[in-house]
Amino acid sequence: MLATGSFTTYAQGDALFKSKCASCHQPHKNSTGPKLFQVRQKWTDGGAKEGSIYQWVNNWQTAAASDPYAQTVSTWSPSAMSAFPDLKKEEIDAILDWVDSQPDPAAAGAGDAGATGEAGAETDATGTTEETSNGWIWLILGVIFVTIILAVGGVRRQLKFAAADEAGEPLNEGMSYAEELKSWAWKYRLYVGLASLVVVIGVVVTLFLGLYSIGVVENYQPSQPIAFPHAIHTGTNGIDCKYCHSSVTKSKTAGIPSVNVCMNCHKQINGRTPAQQEQIAKIYEAAGWNPEGAGSYTGKTKPIVWNKVHVLPDHVYFNHSQHVVVGGVDCKQCHGDMTKQVETQKVWPVEELNKIEGNIPLTKPTMTMGWCIECHAEKEISTGSIDTKNDGYYNEIHKRLLNNDKKLYEKYLEDGKVSVAELGGWECAKCHY
Image 1: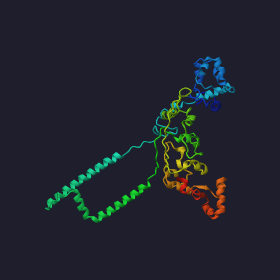
Image 2: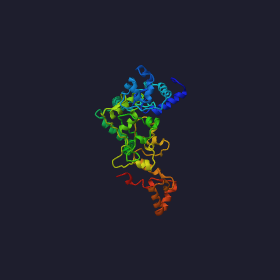
Image 3: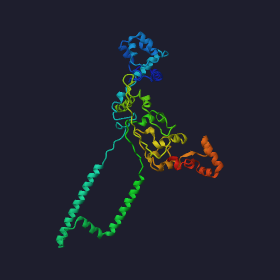
Image 4: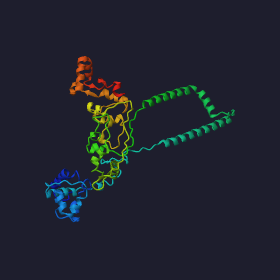
């Protein structure tokens, strides 16, 4: 529903607001400049001269010099407003009509206190799901079963004595439970021996399988100080991964963005729901930002301590830039589809990674040596001759293979590609110090 004007003026106001005003103003929230919702009425109620607001938009200094109310507005923020002498009165009205037609998102989102993202994903304050332990249930069940076994054993013992007494057989009340068990085991020694063998084999197999799980960290998801829904940032808003992880193409590590990077956007955006606002308030606290009025830095900062998710052993070498730039590996191959991740980051199981379109299907657990080796065997450096990469390094390898071992090069190309493993990706020193 439009407040005033036609659809044409509404569209014009929308376009002009985004091109002229949006960098400093928002309809319902103070930013670098004050909120603009019903600002014309506010100027009228404040006693501004007629037409003063249009003069303010064209040149605020002229308006401040001729209108006391405009002079008061000029002290609202230390930031000076830009002059727009080219805007006509009709265009300014189109902008303000569009602003007055915008619904207040705070009122619309008041009922979504449990949501941390605009996508409507329901998470708790940290963006993670708390799991409760059921260990106490198993403990109680164990105590109950032991009690039942002892009770049944006692009843059986008494029935045995009663049967022997009725048959006139001598009673051997002096035998302990252990002695009775020993007597029974000797009587059925063949079956007891076979059962014992099965148990021993089962224990040995279980121990060996347990050894295979050492170092497997799939589904590892530490808690974080701030809930960060990737789905909102890189999915809904389309922010490129490299905007925040700016060193991923230049360094061994992808890097965690500083709070200043967060503030590039969150100076203007403080969330639509109470849950979002609570998380963004932590960013403000870290940056020392007071969002009141036009906003200002207090100088009192508090570092954000993030918990590392992907932890490699000290003897393992991994270079992000080599994989992203040279190898052309997409982030989703290892980290999952960021555009759909409403929870904080975790080590994704290989089965989940295999479901993502474009990923190389692998079988070994994520973040294990077998996983890396398998990927090096499947991932190609080039499809066909490696000189097609038009890279000086690979052109030189292409030339040396042709001159020194053409048959080996032809063997590499039998499957239509040259894999990482074929050019040394399985050499121990590639990944280990």
